[in-house]
Amino acid sequence: MPPRTKKVVAPAAPSTMKELKDTLWKAADKLRGSMDASQYKDVILGLVFLKYVSDSFEHRREEIRAELLADGWDEGKVEGQLDDIDEYTAHNVFWVGPPARWAYLAHHAKGLPAQDGQPAKNIGQLVDEAMDLLVGANPSLKGAVPRIYNRDNVEQRRLGELIDLFNSARFGGEGVSKARDLLGEVYEYFLEKFARAEGKRGGEFFTPPSVVRTLVEVLEPTSGRVYDPACGSGGMFVQAEKFLESHHKDLTAISIYGQELNERTWRLARMNLAIHGLNGNLGTVWNDTFAHDVHADAEMDYVMSNPPFNIKAWARKEDDPRWRFGVPPVNNANYAWIQHIISKLAPGGSAGVVMANGSMSSNSGGEGDIRAQLVEADLVSCMVALPTQLFRSTGIPVCVWFFAKDKSKGKSGSVDRTGEVLFIDARELGFMVDRAERALADEDIAKIANTFHAWRGTSSAVAQNLSYTDLPGFCRSVPLADIKASDYALTPGRYVGAAEAEDDGEPIEDKIERLTKDLFAQFDESSRLESEVRYQLGRVDV
Figure 1 (cartoon, helix red, strand yellow):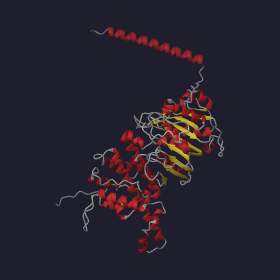
Figure 2 (tube, rainbow, N blue to C red; figure 1 turned 90 degrees about the horizontal axis):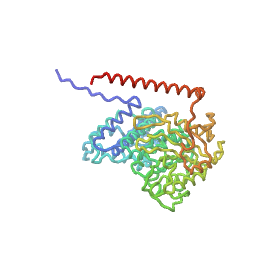
Figure 3 (tube, helix red, strand yellow; figure 1 turned 90 degrees about the vertical axis):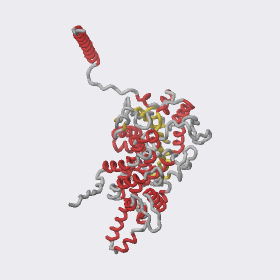
Figure 4 (cartoon, rainbow, N blue to C red; figure 1 turned 120 degrees about the horizontal axis):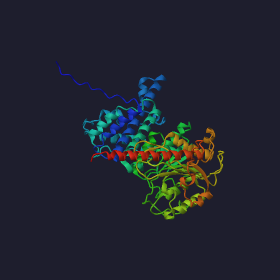
């Protein structure tokens, strides 16, 4: 009887988003043994991107074929038309040449043997060549995709296995727009996972989604220029796009401008924008915002940023025209970021910036004087104190500063808030994701955003029939004179007071009498228990 052969079953394609994420994270684990988190992050995300563009390309290719055949084209002519690059780029799909397509790489996951006088190539060489072809055909990707797969620290066998695992996931099967949504979600999921793996370093390229959403929901960037001077992996821009989409707004109504100092993070942002179909100007190379502002002549309608906190080594020039309200101290760039952001605002522009809590009250290095000037210039619109543990990468408690160039009534019919600042103490909001990290729930974000919009009287407030009133313990609108009297400290807890105790309807005299009786009863019970314990101990035969 002949020996039985083992039947090889191809892995089933993941059917849910959770399965898709799990499959791809298992792929990431394949390289953990040979490189650290920061290295395999670049390898994995580059492959995710390549898989996405290839699947989207193949899907568009089938669409073109079906369209032409439906129009009565001959099969032979259809094949020739499938290589018209314009048929892809016109639909915001990247052109992918044959050796860069995923099917080709998957077929040669163990390498390409020598043939026709050409030397053998390992899978890392093939992937690097695929990246070169992709950039050559799509100039907008120049500098965005990694070319790191044939390096000594990338184990080729594991890279091949990784590609095999990726082969079970298809991003383009439900249309290019759906593919972009799926891949964008996977990309963001990976960024978060890698940020956790890298610890403090991860905070440089990743801002917790609930914090990003808070900024976006308050500012509501619906049109104009959106800017982030320390854009990390581009999370602020992606969330702005999601905001437009959820409110059925024109996705092309905003123009994206950003800057990032770290080369690898800058590349992550370029890929992230490309995956989401966003055309952003992040500069031609990575650059230091303080040393070289690549958007020096541009005014921005919205600025949203989570710049690095309390950095000591920064490119400081005392005569920089951005320091309109005072020269920031040498050993802390917090007020340099704030003043840079204000300098970028167009008339009527607004901004939200995440800062360490110390920025709200610090007086060292002249920071108190700068803060006083900002308040007196009536640029501070709202201050929000956030809960602790939102950032896994740092234990520093944080807040959000919101600025507005014009707090008057304006054309939108909003409430005139000239000479006032809204303080929101949101430290009690949120829920624990695990023992180390907290997140803001949807209702928490809505509470903060709706409070602001009600105070400002925006169109969102009108649509929801919201009206503003001070809420002790949570929010209060404060005139500038009161802030001056508090030595220009901007800590919300100083102004919102304590939450009012709920009135249970019991008269205070009756409550005191009842509680006193309860307390004495507890004292009596404690005495009884003490006597019983002493009696029982006395019976013990030592």
